[in-house]
Image 1: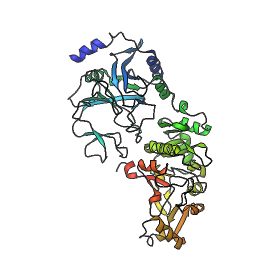
Image 2: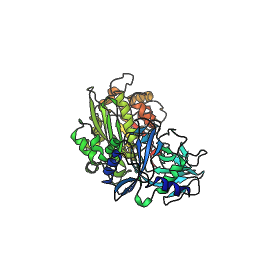
Image 3: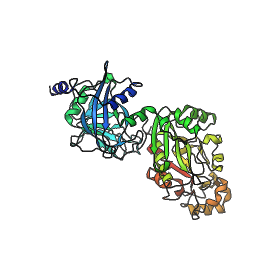
Image 4: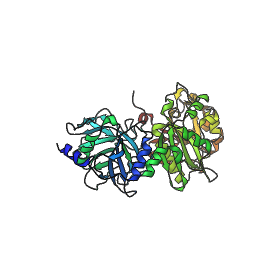
Amino acid sequence: MVLATLALGAGCSSNRELPRRITESLDGIARSSRSSQFLYVDPGTPGHPQATLYPVRRSLLGWELALAPVPVNLGRNGVAPPFEKREGDGRTPAGIFPLRTAFGSPQGLPGSFPYRRVDTQDLWVDDPHSPDYNRWVWRGETRAASFEELLRPDPLYKYALVLDYNTDPVVRDLGSAIFIHVERGAGSATAGCVSLPETELVQLIGWLDPEQRPQVVIGSASAVAATLAGIVEQLPADLPAGLKGRLSEGERILALRHGAGGFFAAAVSLPASVGQQMQQKQSWRPECPVPLDQLAYLVTSYWGFDGAPHYGELVVHQALAAFFMDSLHHAYNGRFPIERMELIDAYDGDDFRSMAANNSSAFNCREVPGRPGVFSRHSFGAAIDINPRQNPYLMLEEGGRAQAAGITAAAAAQQFCLGNPALCRVLPAASADHLDRHNQRPGMLQQGDPLTAPFRQRGFTWGGSWRFPDYQHLEYDLGKLLSPP
């Protein structure tokens, strides 16, 4: 009864008009959307955690308010630009997101919108290193180190709408558990969700109709326009035409980063032309452990050995795209030099040629050198090699494994190889003069440097710490990437 009274008092009878910037944004959305219901979250001052939510419907007469606008709370640091939100940054993501379900602790809600009652078994994983990241799971079915309990002792999740954010695909560290939920108090910022009073939230959920394909719109008019425009409008003017063309082919943007000093990086779903090239050059084959549709195409800024900024390209696992991007952003800020960064297909998928050219690369479906039948982490898009000429791989041949079983440190490995040259190889061969890691030169990876440190902070292991070191190599744990069979 209360819900019906609220709907009558705040529905079509409201005389408030929609701001023009919102109707113009909705007109743009309508060109590619069949949705007829929108919750439009219009931020106030940039960087501030307050906004206004407009429940809007499309009618024969155009856009109209369905319910009265309501003040809402955002992340403590405001709204992130489209595709730039990260886990724990205190920002609400900008963009256009479908609404498909709601949850809460009461038995049910009026209306037709899908609703699920939660109990102590319902969790939402926010551990970026879990295969279950940003997924609703049952207690006991995940090994995630961190998660939210959806049945809370406070009223925040008494009712909540789930935004379809970062779900297809799930990109690690792009943010998780983005809801519209009950506010802690008037003006109380969130960790990244949208919150509002319980009464208004219940009213909104009751108004939503799944047949109308409801969506949430978050952000300023310019942020919404950028979302609609796609990747083309995001590209720097000095980006080479080939990279622009390949990025523009990607069907969806996965992650972006605009940084100080001219840094730019973008990851998109694998462009068809890149996938075709990978098959032609045999860097990907049907027997590879990761299908093409799980890979991402990444373009990033980097500093060259010439002291100038350049753009490079990588293929990586799409779940790890933000990890690669943000680590390379830190490397850029620290002016770590990289000789070149081209797809392995520029070398016909030949890792030895790529290393000889001092090329930094990621995906290549190949075996671990010296271990036939064993796919390398590169085959999963979960590894990167940096400046092979400055960062040699000291490879133990199969025949030397028994003799070298007792070696536990890189220094001992080098001594073993000096005494047993037939049992070891240095890859690439021209990098042997860089086995002396005390003689630090540009482009050499070291513990704590501007490139190694951010990768390790994001869960990567550096091969330079192995007993037979692979100084060029950084890899992500497949146990954290892939769901168990």
